[in-house]
Length: 610
View 1 (cartoon, rainbow, N blue to C red):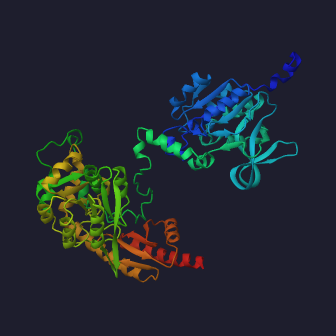
View 2 (view 1 turned 30 degrees about the vertical axis):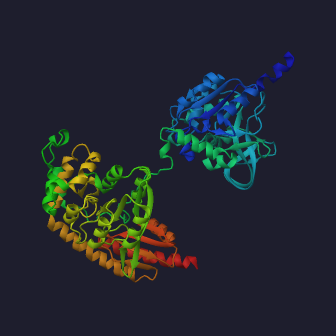
View 3 (view 1 turned 180 degrees about the vertical axis):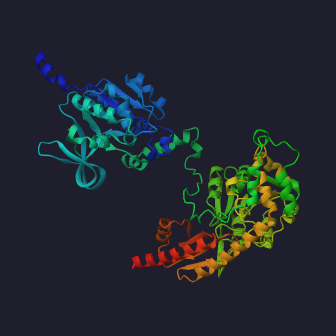
């Protein structure tokens, strides 16, 4: 090209390309927990490297990579391709508008690229005349930024979602004038909190009249964008095996696919009928230690010879001091004993249905799960001990979980059934979860069991009956032989002094807890009879502070979701093609309001289904 030609084309020469690679790509977890999405290998090439090579092939040699999440992993690109690395320190708090702000001083005639795009053919050019979005055509509905065009070829508007339309995807190109205007507008508004959550496209849409742009329409099968691992897998048949290999080789690879139990998060303070909390609240005397607290209870360790709370438990329930241990709630007792007892490939027998925390712990201990059933007969549920014994024998189980009262069915196990389980499975450890101990008289003599057997443990908590869930304290009862092993995973030092004092005050207030126990019984009986009047509900008698029920003849999921909208939360269980609810009881006025809304909701859902 002669000098005159160079002079004429100079304004259109691309100055550089910006590749945004700062985001966490949460929709691509768990792989993106290990690698930023731009470093995924797709069809044999690292995504961002393929894009860099295509830019270099087009004659674009100044390439700026904006990094944030796992920034250090991109540093090799500096030596390999002589790119410039810019750190976006705000990537966690702000959307990708912050990446553009981080490189505002570089922008001129610039390509704006994302590290997660794949171009089957090179879309980049050394000379570009006008600003544009790359665009694909969607036949049918697409949930993307769709465009409409004016007669002069410029994009007239951009809107989210459309049918049979062109939509933006992949790189943009900004002329120098476009870049200058964009940055001018962004600098004026960047400190506004509502700007921080914006994508670059959203900010552009706000100022569309000031930032004219065209559509660079692509043929099908040229530009690809990946938001999820499933989309990568659909595009690249080898991606699934690649992903598994990366995760397996990683430091934490053995935990891939292991999920952690998490309770339902809610700010609801009134309709919480899903946690099985004691909604009558604790003894008022539990607050005394907090009002009378002294600084020594905060800065000194409790180093006395014996634990005051264990002494109190021992005296109240007539259990030897040396057979009792304290822990941070019943869930931590279960975790500790499984940490000691369950190893790779050990077989664990669980009830079905069950508290979903149990299988989560088995998974992270890499045990194998087997399940025994409950029976529903008439107005009660029962442990299916015959099924348990058969499953234990068939699978040579090392660890058996028995809940009594059971969660979610609410029934106690008979002492002779429990002894059958413990005695006939001497090589299995039997963990008896008594989280709901106290709501009913329990016929099991724990002293008998721990004196006779080393392979059984009882776990109790102060969260439920004593209404001290916020203190996170519980205790276990076990033989001295078993204590030798369990001791290895108990808290190193004693639990908080003030919290233990609050529990002691509660244990001593028999008058208060006997009164609320009677009230809970009365409300529970009333609730049971009201439920029994509803054709679609079959409730079961409960030895706890909740009622379990079978739901038929109505959309159980829709009823639950509608009740959530009305302010009430409760649990739903599905197994063997049947639906069940578990609903906590609350003081009578709350339950009356619940029942009215519950009955109205069932009726409305049935009418809607007709």
